[in-house]
Length: 350
Image 1 (cartoon, rainbow, N blue to C red):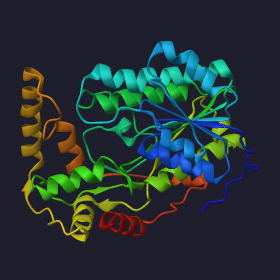
Image 2 (cartoon, rainbow, N blue to C red; image 1 turned 90 degrees about the vertical axis):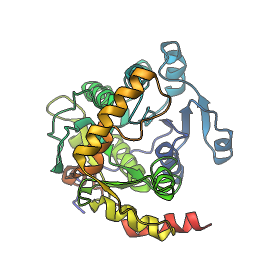
Image 3 (spheres, one colour; image 1 turned 135 degrees about the horizontal axis):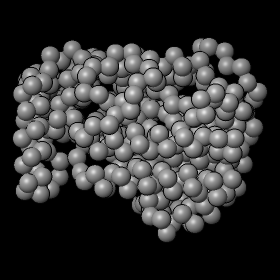
Image 4 (cartoon, rainbow, N blue to C red; image 1 turned 120 degrees about the vertical axis):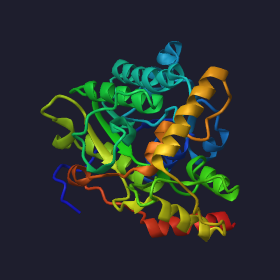
């Protein structure tokens, strides 16, 4: 691990986590509590169970302008805000993604400014640099996505850009881009893979040799805490950025995997047949084009079985260089791929 040269972090008196009831947000809450930090959390869905864990939880839609005052009230006296709340997904109305991801983020920034909260750690995504092509060892110099295939990627790119521009002496910001967060408690990614594979609906897209980064949820949470501690310690790499913008960092388990080999290893560990059927990228992309058209014209509920964005993501390399994260924050994964898979299989066996 690279040596990180800055003073020890000040002990925060209070931190706030938006999306605190979500998969990553909840992991961040656990890491904060383990450090003895006073934690408040926000989310749309009430979580009375968190009160028993020492978390003051507020049910609040941060994307509504009339809630900025309440949001500022919650942030008052807070040393660090972790903004993880977002609308994820591969399908839906652009306006819904814009409201949750862009307007919600603007409201968080405004609430921080009103209360003098000095440190904001924003949960971004590598999708902000999606370009339709393979990315092998990409770094933070990649340009933002500006296309139309993914409203999620576009609105997250716009939101991250606003967070980075908001960086100043009064509000220091860091944006983190964890790729494919997984682990025990994942409510979306792996359960969906298991369901489709069990029903023989899953197909390998492309040649099945593409490599991707994964990020165990504990590693993602660990990176967020490292960012907060670096801001609290006035780390010059984060707080004195010469370009005037807040830093952004890719986050991963630092061990790219062959996507379909990894999926099949997990499935067979559960006793689910491995995925062997294949479809070419071109065929999957064409199918995505037709299904998207059909879904839009006829207003079909739910997501299409395949979209152009998903076809591209499932068939191309997507892994990133995290050397800057290591250098600036001293990051190293705390859960290995092997350990993470072991925990998953053990959890599903219960």
